[in-house]
Length: 456
Image (cartoon, rainbow, N blue to C red; front, side, top):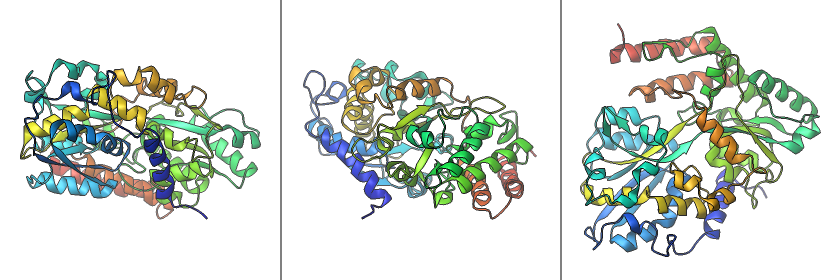
């Protein structure tokens, strides 16, 4: 009997959560997060509503939520949605000034629009008030690159919760069947590696990539290839914002991407999200995957994945222009019109505290903590000593070498990115050539940016 993609993912994640189930307690036995909470339950009886992407941070947080509710008397309702539903509902609620949700997971690709539109309440008054935020919160424990994302025009609108990059996972045993001994170091080598794998191991797809259109679909890994080939989204960001989608290097990157997904991907890869990529890896149907480091505990699950114990991890490939690792930071913030902002802050500071993020990282598949104290903890390092010790060093390398501007931080990126990702998808499925698809997208993006006033 075959399992669906959600069966595989939920079972693997669930097994890890159940294995760590029990009362959440800090290092000294105190309830997790107690060090940052106000005494006396001043907000007892309050109900908060939290809306988020259904992913490893939010599911991990829900696992430890009883500790917060018991300590504060605050009830928190979680609404966890898929990528598109989450983005659409968040934008609708925030743009209309709704107070239906108090606390929001902030998607990295939509953060600039949320900040510039002032849909979120600034967090500085809460952070800077010692009566609301004790020294035990240790703001300086966050990685600087992570906390930097939550600030616009000297105002902080969100705190970091999920720092992500992308790695290259490759199956040693499948490579050996093809007479290959190492991961590709360049994208040209990746193309050749895929050709050899398809020829010599025809029952296994050479590579797994997110082929589906979307900001968190193909547009999450694609810029690694784009920048490596010397391509770009804009002529000279941020000085010249005219689109550069018909640049020969950009078109070449789309051609290479389309070939990798359509010709060398697993069946259905042209419409694959991260969920299908996870299942393909777990079921042993792909030789390589280029996807997020936060998914490693699902890709390599000892209980559920055929890739466990057979997979090595390498940096993402470089190209003629160099190597450009991915970076994205998810945040958490409160709505400008939240009904009870002090209670919402109590939840936000607890949900980003040192002990809560460490507890989640030790008890659930959550790995992408933005805090130094988490990633430096020996228990975290032991738990995530994956791929014969290769995982954490490569993650650190990719974060250190991250692209300076991986996703352009402009308020219009949600709409612009959709146009570009749809064009890449049209090329990938063969509806248009890469050149025609990008020519169409350039016209669409030019219209958006002209209307926004970037140029005349």
